[in-house]
Length: 244
Image (cartoon, rainbow, N blue to C red; front, side):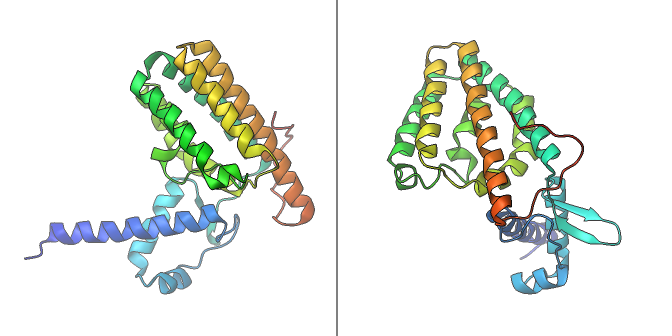
């Protein structure tokens, strides 16, 4: 016999599904940054009522993927160049710290698992053909494995919150340049090598260098796509220098 408790779980599960579908649409570019959402159209297309949809929207507002403006409604969040610059600066500092801590705290078995992960990545067709180096799930993500290996719960929470969701959008959009996937794999191997040596300074430096290169590459990609008209120009806010 169904109870109120059973019904609550079912409703919450529907909210999870709707939130996941909206997040996927945002990350894949199906819902473009700055685009306005129509609750009526979304509810109809997903075959759900307004209640679960609104709860899913509130959840993604909390992740900073959606933003609500009075008298306008809900739009897909669009980062300015200054926003993106600041986020990537914070990411470099925090992930560098996490990597240094991982060199001290990460179990040998977890580092060995990273080694195997990179071997598996190197065998992937997308990496061999330079079509991409990206993973949708946290458990397959090289960076998230190191963040968890830091042993610092607060640091893990910070890097798994807003930063994680906002960066996923831009990581997914970055298309590969010749040799990029192989370069990322090489940089990841350098990080693991420092972890194996239990050298926190070298591990932090290797991670920071890797993320600086990723920042420069992302800036180049955004500039190139804007020039070609493939994406709308990111809004400028204040004086912003290069991402390096």
